[in-house]
Image (tube, rainbow, N blue to C red; front, side, top):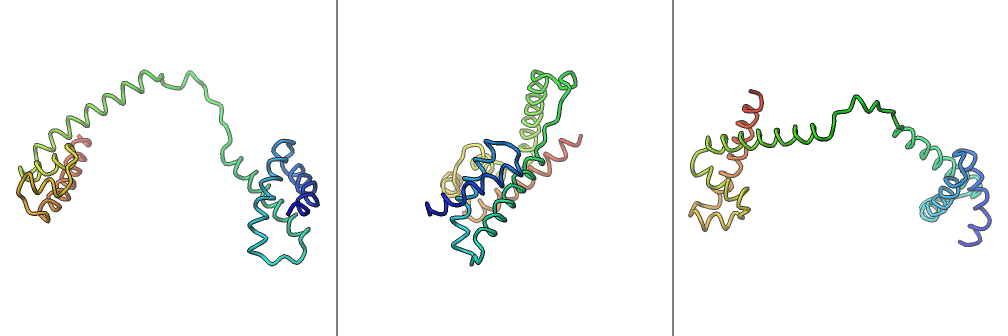
Length: 162
């Protein structure tokens, strides 16, 4: 492998420099490509190694260029951005509202359903512990949790749309 490295690293660097137009990026890409080639050469039957390695290098560089274009930077007028304090306060108000809605919706559940949901989600009890605490059948516990979660979601959606 070291013979291949010594023989082709300059060519890889040259191809990368041609496409990436940056010395450091070209060096990094050439090393990345050589590592890529080590795994790819075992999977492919290569008749013309020099042509194949050139094509792998070209494709690698083009993919690198494409991925950098996807994440182009945009300038932002700082005066148009809300301050962090306002965003933090809005988040706290939303949490408070959600908590109130959750408390209200828990009160709307059937008593057994409410008890099982509170034990499972708020007190972090497992199904077997809930069975021991409540004396409710394991399958009913599972059913109460599933139905309670669904009923809570429906109620919370209604509350948030008000």
